[in-house]
Length: 248
Image (cartoon, rainbow, N blue to C red; front, side, top):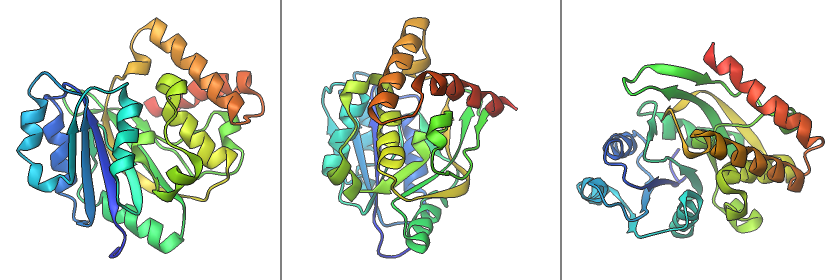
C-alpha cells in the first residue's frame, strides 16, 4: 500500500551461486517503495561484483568482516529507514513478484506489529523438498514448539528500538529468540498471510553436522528459559516434531 516503506535486508558471504537470484527477486517486486540493503561479510569470491551490477537498486551496500549472520542483520537494521523490516538471505528468494505488496497490504489493513507467512524449502534443481505451513498464531503456541519461518517474518522497525535487535548470545537461535521475545514474551500483534512468501535453499549452519545441531538445541533451550516458555524441555521435544508434517 502507498505510504508504507519496506526495508529488505540481505546478508551474504561467498554467495556467488545464489545472490543474483535473490537480488532479482527483490527488484522484480511490483511493490516499489523498498529500501534494499545488502550486508556482505567481506566475500572473497564473485559475490560483490555480482551485487555491484545492481547497485542502482540498492540503497545501502556494506562489505566488511562481521561477527556472523546476526551481527550483519543488526548492521542492516541500523541502516534501515523503512516502516517495516524483513530479512531475505542470499540463499533465499521471494516466491513471486507480489510478496511485498501482500505484506504491505496486511500491515495497512490489519494494523498489526508483525506479519508472517509460509515458506518452501527447495533443492538445487528448484523442486520443493519441504513445505512450512505455519498456520494462524494463537497465544501460547510457542509453548508447544510453534514458530514462524524467519525468512517470512516482517515487523515494524520501531520494535527493534523498543525490544532490541538480534542477540549474539543465542548463536544460531538468535532469530528464534527474537521472535519469542517479540511475540510470546511481549505479546505483540501478529497477522498471518496464508501463502508461500519465500523459497529457501535447503541446508543452513544450525543443521550442518551433529555438533552444530547440539549447539543449536542448547541455544534453543536458553532462548526458551529467558523468554518464559512454560516447560522448555517439553517444548524442545515438540519443536522438531512439528517439522515432520513439512515433509508431507
